[in-house]
Image (cartoon, rainbow, N blue to C red; front, side, top):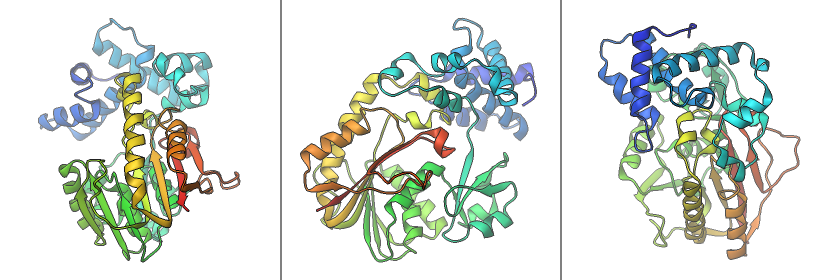
Length: 377
């Protein structure tokens, strides 16, 4: 970024930081503000965006009562110093400052995880099935990722405007989310339900793995998310799905029995804190408790849709015990007709297969993720 921001850009970044709170996440506030600054050069907008995220990433190192603009400049300095010489920061600094103190009661705050949180996140792409090498040859600044058809992108171009993206040749999808699709491994001709589909990133991957053959159901409680899925699916040429609202209750959107159900549940998102540093300071233990209760209820509501011999996959991009192993323990106690089904770790193929796996960001190179896998007897 350069050692210091121009004072006018630092002031703009500080203005954005001061507007951020629980109801106004940093990424949304940033987009809204920069959209209004029509005369701002694209390069300067990029510098402001990185400075805002640097502020929240390095907030634990900043003076609490100091001027925000000065804090922004200090965060930029820290980010550049860490990128140039990460070993220059003592280990105890990371575990003490990178996340709020309450996190230590919900998951293990290791030096390795905390250091990962302080790096700028990688951008991951997913090519259409079997087209990873061909896409890499056509798209500059990419290198192969650890999963089939995954690519890491090492530039700052706005890929949403790229002709190859507009033509549906790739999706921007974190590597951990791509791994969930490979765990599901849906086969052509099968019927699957993406129960919390959101805007459809994982559903599009499932469709691609199925060769657009078979049937997918997508549900979410928000109609606007399903509308975004409709637009994304048209661009990605995904035509084998149906969408319906579902509030998470016992009345499911269809009476169909599925070969597989993916429940990518709402969560506290600790696994995304490297990419979304503002959330570190707005998420609370109460959020974790409420979301764990919701996750338990969603699993119980979705499970009856799995046909005998079918599979249920539970995924959350969080790392807390309450939302991962404790949710699974409650489900196992209430649903004895589901047996754990071990699967290979996509990031550590030599590890012993397990039915529950926690992938740390330091392991994936992207977000952290927890995945559990069952088969209905």
